[in-house]
Every structure is written in structure tokens, then in C-alpha cells.
Length: 287
Ligand code: MN
Image (cartoon, rainbow, N blue to C red; front, side, top):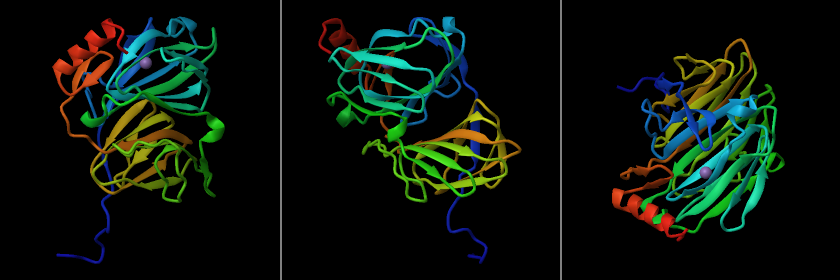
């Protein structure tokens, strides 16, 4: 029976949460592995989410020397510090605070990601976005946007939304394009007591990651503390509220690929045979 109070859409509620696990990668970089851990192996199409945050040089100074990737995209979003990247095709640059590098590894690159600093705070995220079988061997490419090229929507209630990918309900569009999973990647700062709603495609997998403050999720208003990822259930809309303090969080979603995932360290393919081929190609300098 339909009633007058029935909602026209479903609000996504918090269905699970994880704070990730401490991990070390590259040449001894201390980080927190949030997706790609035993607790949350994958959130299709997202294969991995690492958070790094330290003002202790020994935690990051080793960086990520030359290493390969194949079969997916890496998204580096920096909040503090500077990272220099350099690949085997001669592509080089520096990622600075509030800038993003959305790299399509495709059939393969070998690159290094090194801190461009010897002290001070280094803070940011790396997200791995899977590519569909049809595009795993595509040409490598980059979508790079420094802070000044990423639109920030400023609302009258003080809410600020930096849009890397996707479109806000008010129409602000992020520059990153990916037709395979049509991602949404937003960095939202919500003042105390205010709320933020955003439409999401109903079939997307979606998560929030709270950078600072406490976030109330969904109509149920379940509280998600800082440094925690929350998985959002199904629905067409999200609603968030800030409690007593300002809250900063990432809102990320993407269309699931629903394909087999075969992992081999820096290679993510559909079959184990393709992973072995990637190791073979890397060994013979075919990247
Ligand atoms: Mn890398």
C-alpha cells in the first residue's frame, strides 16, 4: 500500500565501518590500509584505499621507489606535503596539497612516488580504481589537477565541496573522467550543525571516509568518527549531518564492474594467468 508519507527515494544508511589496519609499503612508508585489508578486501570497483598521515620523516622519507602497475587506476589526493612522481615514459610532476593525480596504469607503467620534503606533515590518500577487462591493457594516461583547477562549491550555510569527479546536486562538476565506473569523488567540509545531501546512482558502491570531526550518516544519523570509513547501503540519496564540530570527509562512489579480481601485488587482472603474464612482461622490460 502506498501512503502519503512514503519517500520518493531511498536514503543510503551506514551498513558497515572499518578503521583499516596499520601497514607499511614502498620503502618503509607507514600507512593505514583501509580497503584491500583482511577486514575489507574490496569494494568493487575500489581495490585499495591507503591513508597516510605523519609529521615524522622516518615514516615517509623512503617513499615508493620504482615499481610497476597494470590493470587499474591509482588516484593520489594530497592534503598536506608534496609528492614527486616520475615514470618510465618520461612523465614527471609534483602533486601539491589539495591536488589530485588520477593515473590510468592500463597495460603498464613503472613509476616512483617520492616525498618532495625532508620534514613536516605528509598527508593524503591513494585509491585504486579497477578497470574493466576490456580496458585493462589500455594505453597509460594521466588526469592531473592542482588545487586551483579543482572546482569548490561554496554553499550559503558554509559547506564547501571540492569536486574531483562527479556532479553535486547544485551542478558543480569535477574534471576527472572515467566512463567505466562513472566515479564520484568529493571532499566535503561541513560546518557544525549543518547537513549535506547528495544524489548517488542507485547501483553504485559508495563509502565515506571521515578526515576530521564526527559525521552523522543517513536518516538514522549513525555516528562515524574521524579516521573511519563507512560503507553506505543501497539507495539513491545520501544525507550527512555534522555534530558539534566541523566535519571534513570524502564521499566516493563508483559503478561495480562485477568481474573476477585476480591480485598480484601491483598488478590487478581478471585471471591468475594474466597476473603471471604481467610479472613476465615486467621482468622482460615490456612495460
Ligand atoms: Mn604506484
